[in-house]
Image 1 (cartoon, helix red, strand yellow):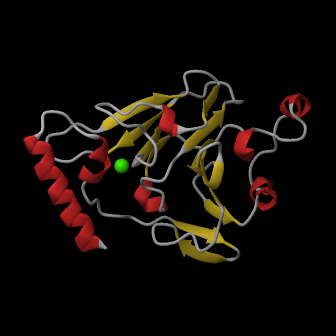
Image 2 (image 1 turned 30 degrees about the horizontal axis):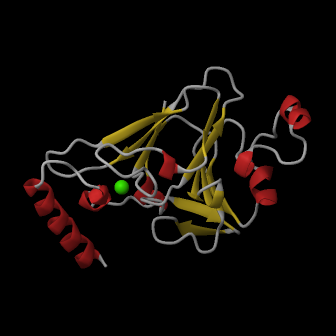
Length: 201
Ligand SMILES: [Ca+2]
């Protein structure tokens, strides 16, 4: 697997040097980065997210940095601050899209806030390989209930002389990106399954 990836990377890099513009296959030019696995608590054991979520459907980096994973929403929501009363009144049944926790950035494996979900609260940059989520994000949501929350930036690493690709998200309190296929990638293609790192301001 690793050997194949390196070969693909070399081939793609060689291609890049002979072409004027980056192509839609740009995701393949990303270099191998050392992985620092994130260890999460899941059903009373420790799991290595970089290797395997081991069946977990939701993983949350809670305010303060503890990481916990869950089988379902009911368990996940016990650990995050409950939705404010006003929000419950406005939308009593469904909560936020994808059951995203208020004030968290939620990254989803599939479009329309489906599939496995990764939730981040605090500011800072996460390298998603450490979380077993590199090149997997297909939709993103955040509702900023807390005053003063800012935006975020998704990053696709590039190799050699090529600048990393970035895109700002969340200029308003509701940041709703139900399908990253609809966000154009510089030079062609789209942002689906390309995000390598996520920076929260
Ligand atoms: Ca990527």
